Length: 82
Image (cartoon, one colour):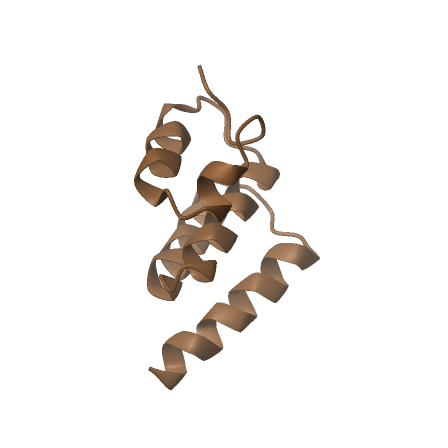
């Protein structure tokens, strides 16, 4: 099984379809993987999806850290400006 940790360029290079497939196949999603996905979607202009992922992360019981909050705050501003 692939991991976003092993292939971080999948998200940062914009291959969000591949990143989502890896994400969906990951049995236990860590804060690091959530952060990569949220950041990747936001980085590539998909702020609404990034915010949806943040909500999903909270619902799954994963507690956000400062890095996630900074990313979400930034993407929320972008969504509100659109």
